Amino acid sequence: MRDFPSCSGENGVQVANSPSSTAGKTAQNLVICIYRCRIRGKTCLITVTWTKSLMGQCVTIGVDDSCNTSLCKVEIKPWLFTKRKGSKNLSNISVFWDLSSAKFGSSPEPLGGFYVCVVVDKEMTLLLGDMRKEAFKKTNAAPSSSLGAVIMAKREHVFGKRTFETKAQFSNDGKTHDLVIECDVSVSDPCLVVLVDGKVLMKVKRVHWKFRGNDTMVVDRISVEVIWDVHSWFFGLPSSPGHAVFMFRTCQQPVEKTWSFSQQVPTSSKSQSVGFSLVLYAWKNE
Image (tube, rainbow, N blue to C red; front, side, top):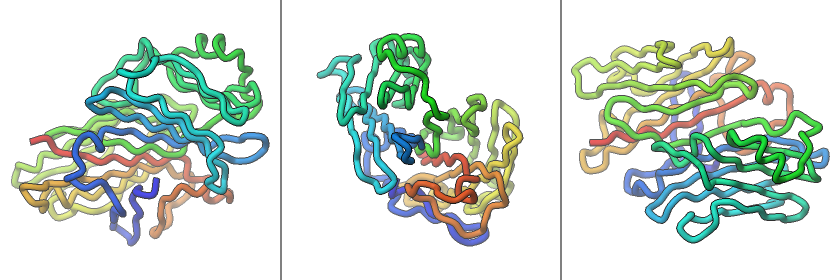
């Protein structure tokens, strides 16, 4: 999470320690999701990292307390060398997974046919995937007595020539939406368009001159601030075109003009008003 963007100024977005174009697509093929939960009365973070390489798929689950002290970390290594289902217990925190029937698209994150879950003190703290019945049967876990884990942030790399697609859930109890970013940099007057479920919710004209900025759209009656930096699409070196960066951040209150995004656990009611952040690194395929 240290390489998530930090933004400052009224219309500016700066990328701190973002992946370079020389990193190679092996390093770029990853999705990181961070969830906030309560474990034994304390606020904790669960980080799930999906990666894809020539060796196969891999997922890492880490549980950290509010002081960034690791409570549990499990790495399910590339499936060429390991079982696609299993479990591991560390400090009374258990991780269960069944990826034997998982279905994938272009992303390292599976589309369905799987479960990955974290069980603490026999309670289901985090459950990912569509095989919920199988997960509860395997773990013998009870539903969480609290609200369970809530997604805070997601980082993903997307690839395309003119369109860049992903899925996003802007509220924890909301539906999953198809999110598409369109921008044709080859035309003389390029336009940046953001679509949600096929509907245009944001359009930036003359983006060649407005290559950094921010705007707001509404999804599921929630305000979503969109921050973009597409400078590298227009002014990057031909040998190293780089990537654009987009952040989608849900807000329950007016957004301050100067802010930063970090892995710190929200503690105040004001900070908790920011519900979810999605960071996309958009790489153009030639």
